[in-house]
Length: 478
Image (cartoon, rainbow, N blue to C red):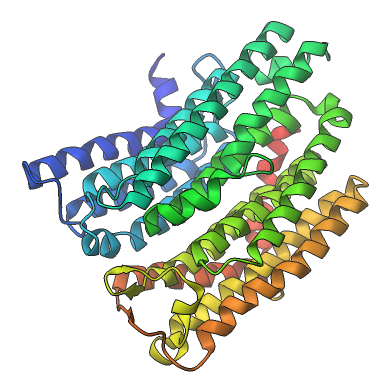
């Protein structure tokens, strides 16, 4: 390790140092008390760190792009994944303080764990080695287990954290065993060297186990069962952040492993990923139809959207990678916007997480109802929103790879999803306020919703800038 290596990981170092600083500030401010001021300096330190990491992520690299013996690489894909992870973290930080204060949750620990998890997702995007990919996966996952159980007074939160931990431990075991088998088959864990190692039989088994670990994180069928329960039980801002950052890390890993490390075996892993994508889209959308709890509805929605993004990975090539990266930015904007509106609602001191709790929102906060409707339309993939452009890119990648059936399933399941997304928007604009549900006026949450809504419109109407950026990033995997 030298100063050049440290300069390559400057964005991740900034987040790590900020997380430790937040913990120290919180300990100094609270003393023996387990509670802290969620609107104190800790949140501003965390936001400043995210902004600083964004600046460092886009700065050009001077000298070799690789670091730490080639394990870490700062290329276009690293920058795209890093910016997506930082966007998710920044918006999650904006929507969190009011909720943490209202439910008296430990703010310092929350902000620190959020920054650590973001660091893990960024490391997964920068991994050119299976060992570093595993370390990134763990740095991403372990803070999320703790965050899911952060509400110590809530049995639902404790149950969510325990379920996530136990199932995540099994997925981790599969992943690390897959790394061992890949090493045994190829004699290396370097992704570039794996691509030149041929196709020994043991390699297929190892890759299948790697898929299990990453598919669990992305909530792909049949490794999705944890998502609805954990989403429902976790505190609402944790659910919002988890729904974004886990997908950023998981799909960064999938892009590194398949299009980069195994391009010559696309005829083998392409149909496998396509089958998983079909099952995920079908199960996610059909299960969402019957949900009355909006957190569970968005959980199944997230499962379905993981299936859509997997279309791009299965298609492979530059078009598939570009489509996945673009859709990550789109998903962050539209999903965080929807969760942000939910964070404005309060039902007698509890989370207002039923679809019916949105009734009459247009009469009390028309701007929030409009933002929610916009996000729902985008999630459904209707023009002129970002969701339409994102799905268009994904389906185009499938057609370019001659996977017409995969694109057709994506279109049909998108039509099915229109019902439950527009049902949410309809309830929000239906007259007659829900009994016992109050709408708060929180500046930071309002800013986050405005940014998310603007992103949904901008990425839908003017996609060229981000399209060019992700196209450049996709060339890193050629």
